[in-house]
Image (cartoon, rainbow, N blue to C red):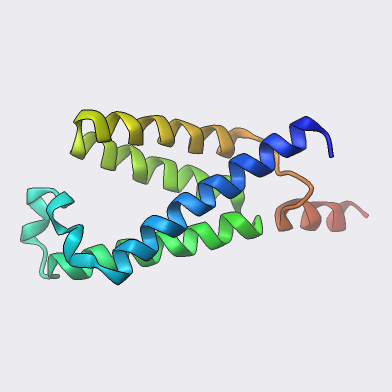
Amino acid sequence: MNMNLAGKLILRYSWALLFFWFGYAQLTDASAWVFFLPEWTGYFPIPGEMLIQLNGLLEICGAILIAAGVFTRLVSAFLAVHLGIIALSVGGAIGARDATLSAVGFALALMDPDPWTLDERQKQKKTS
């Protein structure tokens, strides 16, 4: 395995693990995350805890897709935008950290799929 491939794998699996962990945490203890919701979400007809759980489910689904390498670029870009919006709404040190992680997601979205993704295997199948 060359260093370029190793770097791509570390980046992709770390990105997936990040969203899997946060998604799981939001599903198992939504009440601990409600205070992160922006004030305007109070106008939604859905309780805050349910919004957190929906967000957690979305993040877990995204993490699974990225780990499997399915629609890697699209899902990475979507989650990077998602995290960027969170960074803007939270602000401070947490917002700066999340903005940096969002940039990591955009970097992953700009890379060609690595050979260990289902995206790449599908592409090779079509060209054969």
